[in-house]
Image 1 (cartoon, helix red, strand yellow):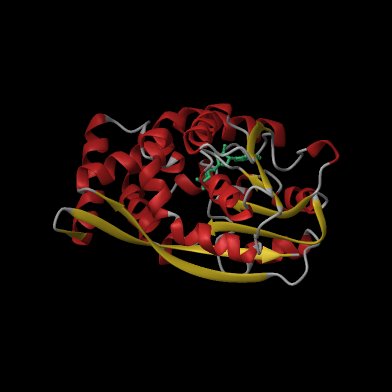
Image 2: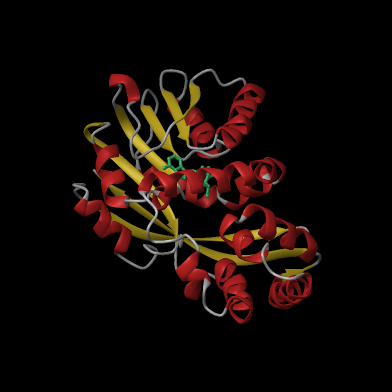
Length: 282
Ligand SMILES: C[S@@+](CC[C@H](N)C(=O)[O-])C[C@H]1O[C@@H](n2cnc3c(N)ncnc32)[C@H](O)[C@@H]1O
């Protein structure tokens, strides 16, 4: 992303990326849901979700975390899921309807400026979303104003590709084709992924008792071709670097990724290890 862009332009680009990904996220939703179980559980524990709470899910996307939270807070509680992308929210609303959940609602809004119409929340969760804020500290600081006194906020992000094969494999495979340009040009979702970096942003934003822990999980797929399909469609950062390549390079890149991914295949099921970070504060 060019460095001269204003925050509004950056947010518009993030929104366009996710609008474009929305159909693919709807298609692969069961896979994403199962992949991220360990993260959802840790976020709920970090934010100490329990019956009766009013919860905000920031960057809810297709609503997975919000729907999970709505079950945890039971009918006496409620959840609001917000996202930049109306197209992602469409799936979230459809899923809430299928589940018959009446205590969850979804609205299009940016987490770093959500007005909340005077509401305040017992807890805030954000699963792989807050690092997309153009100004992360300002966004986290704004969210803190929406928390009731003593309320907890818990956010997840990915650990760096060096220790996170789900992202390390595509990054290494991309390197010969992008001549190291990817991190300079693309919006880099890993800029706060190292130990303590997001936690420092939380502290700078005014949160206290900040904790930073890692959780292991697996990206899985029914075979290498399905794994490739998920990677190229669901990962906005990968897609942005893959799309501009020539057909020949796209083929070579696929081959290079699948050579590594196939090492994680057993009986037709691919399970590639991933590591996430959960950062929580009050
Ligand atoms: C990686 S997806 C995660 C979706 C969902 N939380 C999950 O874990 O399944 C990131 C989501 O954050 C949303 N997002 C990015 N920036 C945002 C912002 N400033 N405010 C609200 N949502 C945002 C995107 O539109 C996208 O739906």
